[in-house]
Image (cartoon, rainbow over all chains, first blue to last red; front, side, top):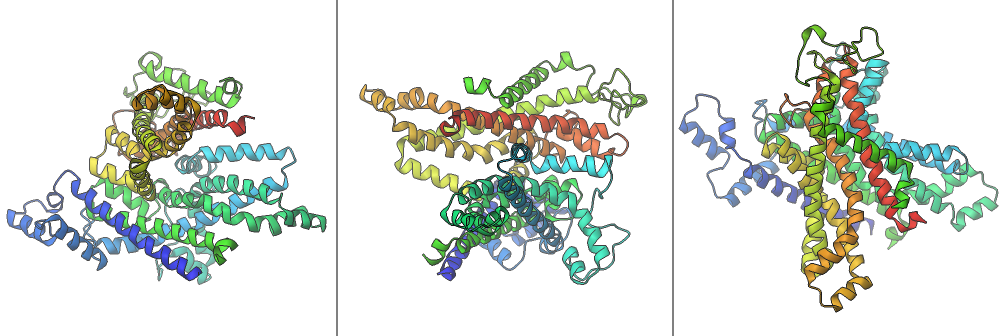
Length: 335
Length: 278
């Protein structure tokens, strides 16, 4: 049963990605300006233009053009970046691990913080602290990642300089790495000093990305917990003399996680979108930062590759969340 | 209405935004200096209260000796213009489609609903990148990008509210009295959807202020000779170790404005929500 749902959801993901590909293809072709004119080097003759036109299939009818384009994408040929003069696929492969590590850490932080706020608010729901927690969470809900990131730069990077302001690793420490997953590689190989430095660089951007997610999780999980605390099984456990902490963590939380995940799913994708501007603020060498340069330089092949990669990330996150919701819901699991 | 006036958050937020709007409109009168006037002899003067401050420059000066307060005041014009125009266009398009879908149902509803679904599946950041990549940078692209992305917020909510309103007695009464469909839709239902719409517009304006700040921060909004909060933050970032206030002042302005739009919107929504009102 679960396998069937996984299969169906995966197929839907592929269909949606195909839709994204069509939209990207269409949008980039209605963009004003001849893409070839932006690609040719100064001094190229009309023959060179015609050759490039044929190379990208731009002299063919639109449907054929789309086929040529799609075939190239499926074969891993994303074209050559106009501004960087490098293969788009290898550029993406070089930068993507940095973004994956950053968003992974931010997701973990957001879930942990949001969960912690909700659990604490539930435990202290009858004390004066409850109002304070609500006020803090209201602030977290209102302020976006962009503003958090800038506030961290000012407070933790400049006024009380405790964290590095930019980059992924201290240039003085940079040694050779086997992979592009710096954090994972150094944690696995036990080079903790290096891993620590990388984490310090990731602290501000990942926290800025995590806070809006944490706020939404906190609000929805708190409501779900409040409802779960009224259920018979919790009352029964209370009669048995379970501690309040055990009631919340052991009984209520288990049943509140599924509905919370279903309602907060879209927020996880917002976090990935947020990497674009947050990476920019901290000069973090990921694909988000690269996307802004690509737009400024009107580098269409690179933009196209980036949009597809971001689209894929969004869809994978959605897929994982949908599957987790199913896995956590006993009714759906056996239904 | 009484619930609104009694809500201190709404009163504070509304008051702040009213003041901001006044300052933006009267910018040439209230700004102490020309926001573009440079004076390299007076570069990076700290704000009042810090040693070396100049009483003529309350919030200090930037790296080119321009008055930070005056730039902040003129920057509010761009922020509020984008917020107002983008939110209005998104609201107009979204409301129209939402009204039609909610009232007529059937094929119109199916079309609009499907369109909204497809739109929502497309991540907003990618959409804004694509729109700006296609249209080029500038304030018009920023406005178009926000409207193109966010009309769905209005369409979804207005559609649901219209469906609920269409069931009510006053609509049935209007229909029995032989009112034309357009008259019912725009004369009867729309006024009843409007309060909810106001809450959404306020929230949307907060989003628009942020999007404009982001795009001007990365240099994709108006040209750099017009002061914008995002542009000021980007310039302040360059000299943040020498003159942190150039960075801090527009950041605080941005923070307060976004918070105010958000609190006003949430307050309006709370006041309208019958469950919360009790």
